[in-house]
Amino acid sequence: MNAYTLGCILTNSKAGIAQLVERNLANLCHMAGLTDITIHSMRHDFCTQPLKKGTDIYTVQRLAGHADIRTTMRYVHALERKDFEALENLHDFN
Image 1 (tube, helix red, strand yellow):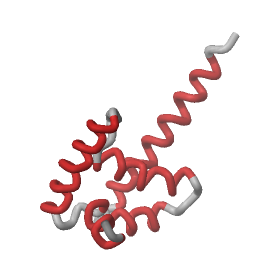
Image 2 (tube, one colour; image 1 turned 30 degrees about the horizontal axis):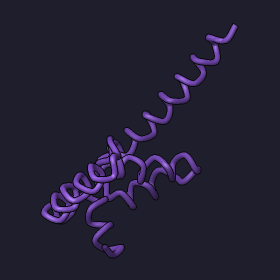
Image 3 (tube, helix red, strand yellow; image 1 turned 120 degrees about the horizontal axis):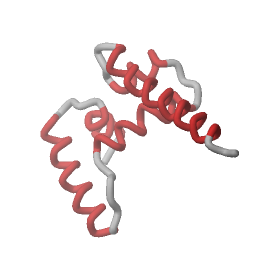
């Protein structure tokens, strides 16, 4: 798989290719005994990892192929929830 094909998959273009890769990914993960790995989870990581490292949201939006910034903002909100949950867990220590 080349970078162009991977980019098509991660940005939701060429839906036929994405379906083929999703099926192959599921088969490979099953053979390897891996669970919970999907194109969606890979796409989620593709968006959240740069945000965790401080990449600005507009760059992530462009790389992910999101037409609307609100789509990209979902990943920011997910990160904020995790931060809040981490603080809640700290509060439980006595």
